[in-house]
Structure formats: C-alpha cells, structure tokens
Length: 152
Image (cartoon, rainbow, N blue to C red; front, side):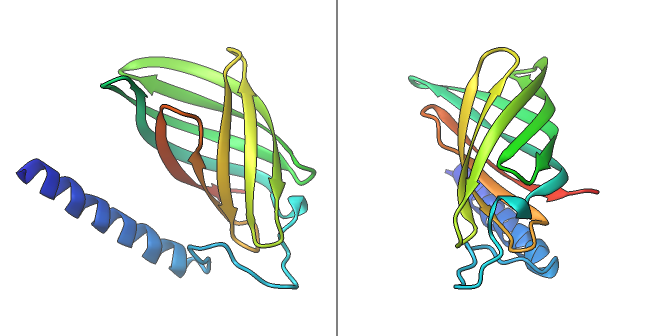
C-alpha cells in the first residue's frame, strides 16, 4: 500500500511539475482551439528531442523500457528519427520514418516504422507555435507518453 501511495504522489508531483514547466514555456496543456489556429503540418518543422519510458504489457507481465531520441520534422506531414532503446536492460538502436496529421485544434496522429519493421501509432498534441509536442502511444500493450521539444 505504501508503494502505491508513493507512486501516486510521485505521479501527481511529476504531472504538476511538467505542467508548470510547460506553462512557463508558453504552451498550454490541452489542445488549443481557435478558428484562426496555426495548427497544420507546417507548424512542425525542425529538429526535436525526446525521452520516454513505460511498459510493454503481455498478459500479466510488464516489461520496462526507456527511450531517448530525436526527430526531424519536415513541415510536410513526414519525419525521420533515431533513438536508443533499453528494453528490460537490453539496448537497441533504431532509425525510423513516419507520417503525421494535425487538426486545426492542434491535436493529431503519427505513425512510424523503424528499421526492424516495427510500426507504432501515436496520438499527439502540439503547441500552436510548434515548439513542443506531447504524445501517447496507442498500440495495444504499450503504456507510454512523453514530451518532445524543438532544439534548433
């Protein structure tokens, strides 16, 4: 029970700190709606970096993983990237290509396929200026989300 309490407290604290940091950077946590929205594929252009971690769930097993990488968005609905992935302590380096869509409310989806033939799907939310992205993997059996920030 104590472990669950610490986990919940840590999650709430982390979410609050991420929210404060994101707000301080000028972004909003939710999708930004506006009839004059700037959200279209061209808002994502440049080099972004990210780190995420989570679990791959198979039956009752939870396999931990962590990933650090970078994406190059072209502003035309396509991107490329590379990452180092630690799955239960085993390191793999990957490269990938992908496509994305953005709605006027700054929400969207992305699909990528890596050099190992694995395809992954994500829901994403973008700040109006395209400086940061938050994403959630939507494939069954994956529990992970992260922030991505432009670095160029």
